[in-house]
Amino acid sequence: MRFYNINTFGKLLLERNSGVPVYDPNDESRLIYDSLTQRVLFADSTTYQTLAITGQIADYVTFEALDNNGDVGTTANTVAEGNHTHPGTSLVAPLGYFMRSPFYWQNGTSLQVTRGATYHSNGSTERLVHAGGDLSFTFGPGGSNASSSALGASQWHYLYIDDSSLSGDTFAATDLLNSTTAPTWSISKGAWYNGNNRCIGVFKTTAGSTVREFWNSGDDCIIWSDYTSLYSANPGTSFTDIIPSLPVGSLKVPVTFHTDFIGYVSDELEFFWRMNSSSTSIGILIGGGKNIATADNDESRIINTTDVVVDPVAQRFEVRCNFSNGNIRFEVLQNGYFLPYGM
Image (cartoon, rainbow, N blue to C red; front, side, top):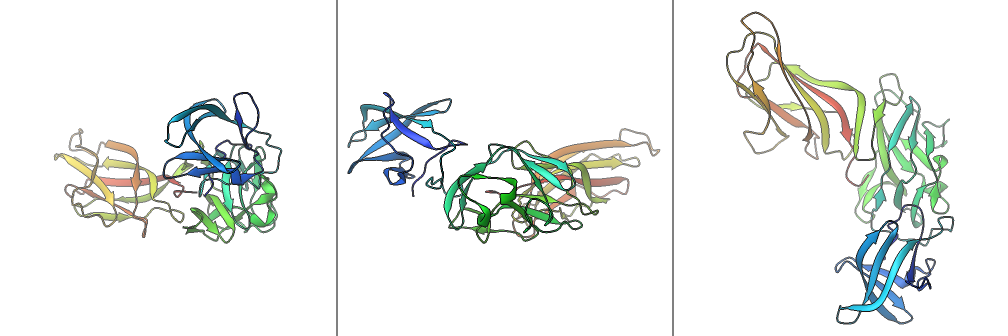
């Protein structure tokens, strides 16, 4: 498989230090990446030279030619950013490659996909595509794409690159669509797909059928602007299932554990979590302590915010206390979710 173009916006041009091009970016047959040796093979006429990455400065990745013995030769080459306005359908990227940029919530019906978002789209045509600027996408069939699903109450809406709408190496807001149909993992494409459409994100709606406000910094964590309570009870000594609201494929959830001592507790308490169906009888320590108040109902609290891992089938985790006490109220609050790996 040919692997190249690590840059966000354009093609890569292989040239000698003198600036004389030795690789035409429209001729994809002449640059090949060997994933086993992690070297780039360059076909010069009928002879392949092996190019090893030796350093990177700004937008330039430096290569050095190797001889047949794998030793560094005398010809240095660089990979430089080319003209991003050229057609990009000849570019072939690593399987499932993507570079996510921040998603910004705009209002209850729209979000922004920011410039720099780059994805290997392997639908009807294999290509590397990037956002043609900061894109304002409006959900629903009356929004950016008529093929989108209407927003309903408390739904997961998956954001796709609409393969049937793509042309060239950039995508616009009209080349995106939202759907309540969840993607499946494609082994052959190395990403989440529904048909030819690659899934690049997923977002929850409120009970009022609007997109729930969220914050994102460009990583895989989506934080809601307010929490959802998952559990509030007197914990026992046996592990209790906690069921967060998660999209397909999500394996981690940001939560806050909040413990109220609503009466006097003289014993030292410890609270634990584990992944659902784990074999451990102990778990991961959340926190501990005891009521520092007197026997009246003055409160003392333990708060711990962390990320927990859920099992891939039921998408649950479990919590317990080292002993049961009626003066303890244990709360689990969900603060958002993590996008699935590869989305």
